[in-house]
Length: 358
Image (cartoon, rainbow, N blue to C red; front, side):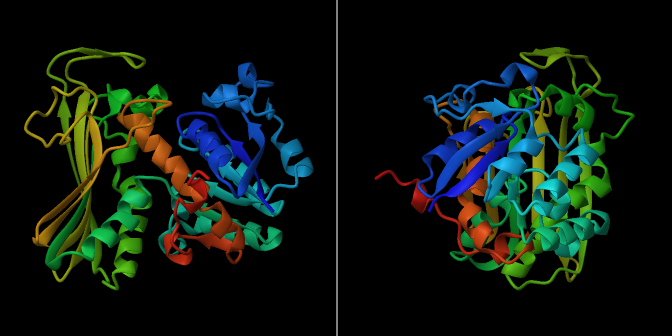
């Protein structure tokens, strides 16, 4: 019997999540939850850019939880700028006995190093509802766990595993987050929230800990590094607006896993709002965005991943699509898992077997 699934949120990740559920042979889309009144009553297929489904979007999430007999819910709604509200919605789903997969809620990526104030109430909600929650995506997500774990198996004498995101965020269709959370267009005198050490560790330390555990390679410490560059000229970015000279135009950060005084595992982001900013920093091997694993060893290995979504073209579309697919394809395993917060290490390999066309 197919798992009954709802998708909550129809933004950059929610739309491909709808398409992924529709394509999955073991899942049935039964509800779509939206916040925008203009989307209420629209067919899920129209919202996601595919054929009509007969599933109409609603803003009444309580009714969906109470009446749709859900097995799982894909939560892609914005939790960056409405954290408390989103967290209460998550708890309500889990208390109702609905398994949740999500690309939000970073403190739940790996509960062993998550914030207790988030982990404890979620674990209790899972216990009360006999439900599970799995948080992943691309970065943080599969580009930082399954990809480097697999790549490390073909290299000897490894000195460093570095996982990079190199991206132009002018392509990222969320201007509020790009400006207010990430800091583009903001003063160079003010460190944006995302680049604070506590934020970097909250989001990316769990991924280093997952990688460390998978490789049976304990780390002594986690350190961070941040560098920022201002725009040398004003730029206008479609969908984003105007960015003044002297405001933040690029940043580079590293979250480093240290062992015996050496940096061995690294998450690195090189991010621009304009490709002309920080020209001495690395660029993607093609296009305006990529994720890649760079392993110093024998051989020196570079695995570069660039996704293309035919429904929503461009590097941002490909990344969003793969993030959605990662959590949607995990649904059967998450439903079968023991109750609680699960990471990729607690699940069997997540494949696209049920996405292969008959």
